[in-house]
Amino acid sequence: MNLDDLKDRLVSDARQTWERVQDSAVYNQLRDRYENMTPAMQKLTSVGAVVLVAFAILSVPYSYYSQSQDYVGEFESKRMTIRELLKVSRESSDVPQIPQAPSMDIIRSNIENQIKSANLLPEQIKGTEVLDNNSLLVPKNLTEGVLQVSLAKLNVRQAMDLGYQFQNINPSVKLKDLVITANREDSRYFDVVYKLVALAVPEAPQIPSEPTKRSGGIRDRLKNRNTENGDE
Image 1 (cartoon, rainbow, N blue to C red):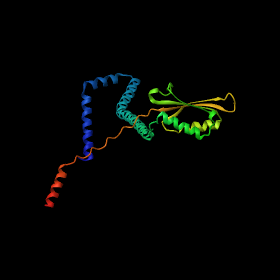
Image 2 (cartoon, rainbow, N blue to C red; image 1 turned 180 degrees about the horizontal axis):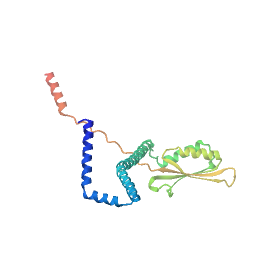
Image 3 (cartoon, rainbow, N blue to C red; image 1 turned 120 degrees about the vertical axis):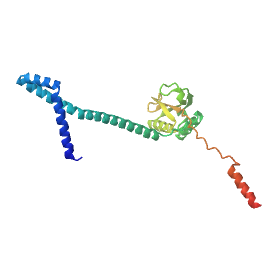
């Protein structure tokens, strides 16, 4: 069927449909009411009918447009969620692996060695002490212990250098508190108290090793049998 035949068929179907509408009682009643109206009411009714038909025609594409907008909003929401998930995944993969903290005895030994390397006088070294963690900043179950280091008569440069060295002992050892007060005997120097906390880093799970192959398998037995036959 070519385009002209299809066009003629559509025109014929439309004409037949219009004739059936004209023959209906509803149409005749509406036509009678329309003819009995005043010219102003007839004009107003015609405008209303045109608006109603236009609304019916435009409602179909508008519904598709509204639905497409909903699909676009849903797509953008899912795309944003996927981007956030990828960002979190990249950030989690970039987090450095923190090693386990050494024991408090090893930390104290390292601290004392650094103090000796600083060439401090005996009167400047007040000592080190292991304390219980009573801080609300770091829960007790997340720490291995707290080491307090007390030094006296330090200048600003010494206080900052020693604090930096103590902080870099181990990635799992953090400088929690730093208290600096002016020395009572000489206000040019300062008494410094360092508090270092050792974090309780959980041990990384061990990957189970592959099970060893059982000896004396069928392949080994066949190999040994072939070797014996060759020797004979």
